[in-house]
Length: 636
Image (cartoon, rainbow, N blue to C red; front, side):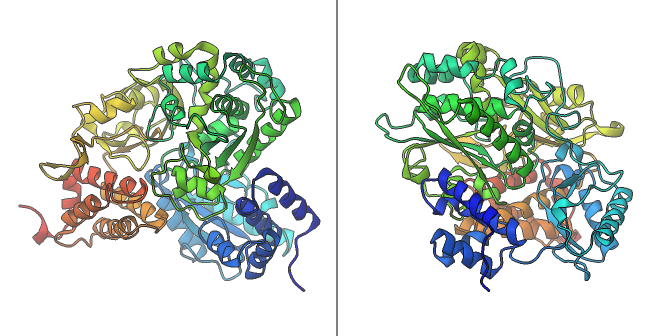
């Protein structure tokens, strides 16, 4: 008998079809429906999706096999996903993985003979403030030790024996006595309060702030009402005056980006980028779950300014809990008439619809054009530019893409004025900055801090210094794609322009004495990136840390262009063999040459994201790499 969807699944699919302009765009959502319904995406399930959406089976297969969260084989009852990237590896993530390998008798990618457990090595689960972490079904275990791992395994085995053969993992109880990632907005969620101005975290700690009625008591939606009266041109000008810069990585001025839209555009889309996948970055998870109505109001104001009537919030697939919180808040906004209802404004009637689009496990979809492809129901392959999204973006229409934190600043800019926001910042960077700190600090977490704070102040005054008084070795300043700083460079402000120009930061080099050229006479120091600050101490295996970063980018390369597809693989292999003591003569120069060949030669910035930190580590910590060479190959 052919596979068929249940009535409940058909209702879910009908709701998806009502939210998108064409059937193909619903594909990721329908694949999720199928996977939730049948447990995995068998050939029969893919054929059913193909028939349901009237899409070629080859296209459905290509999309389903591109994203890592779509399962093509029946999963183990208890899939254990251990994070080993950056924050977790610095705090024992690999130790947890090795202990589980020994405890279960399997390697990553394998399943125990009884089908009870599978094991995988993951890249960033968003719990860096509580490292090391592991997920199993809906549960996110934190601050793991071998003793806690034993308790989890014992408890899951007990649950399996008590529940019988058909107990779904989604209903499993949390292991007793082992902490799980706290709800966003609650104590211990990863956010840490500090003195000073608060903008995007101002409502953190307010009980039930995720509910619209509570958000309204804190002035919620008043900025939107003010914006309607200001009109679009005035609103865009205030954002431009505010010096609000994109908080997702590039730091591009938001008001300038908004101004790129064609004046005669008939239809405009706004996309909120919540695909937080950069290792070392975990602020958006906290923002999405802690104050969803502030984000929704920010999206709505921005959509009005742009003349957009349909906005999308793209949320990383691993953040399903946070996506549910945001969707619930959107449903409340619809019920209250803020969304889906005509609003009078200085520019005439305005109505906005918002759709939450869940990603499915692909770092590349954080790149803006890959994200647009994903929303359109395709593989997340970046597009060639030009044309840029502001001219031809989502569904072929002019589109603006802004990050979660960026849009959550907009209501306060409207409420207090662009000049106020600009003065709260530093130089050409307005407002405050959300920094997520992980690795070797006493108090890791998410902090909202002044734009001009230095790394030294952040590490020693805010985060309490390094454990056991150990010496600092280095800092990754803005997520894994940024060149690191060594311990002598931490007195610079954590501000966009300072990190690219401050003379106290050494230039990244291709080889000693030869600076890396970015073009137009620009040299690379580092960048503020996504705000993911990773601190590592004197005990750190720097080459091993760099190798882990390279393996991440090799895994996440979409494979579309040759420099990135081949180059990231070479960086991962060569750096890993150095880290494992199997380096060969010429390996250091080979790493530099490959990285230099990738940089600036890929379709999107993922090539640079691998090349820049590789060259940065070689520049700042070259002696560590030389120490891994055979004696005969070491420089005299």
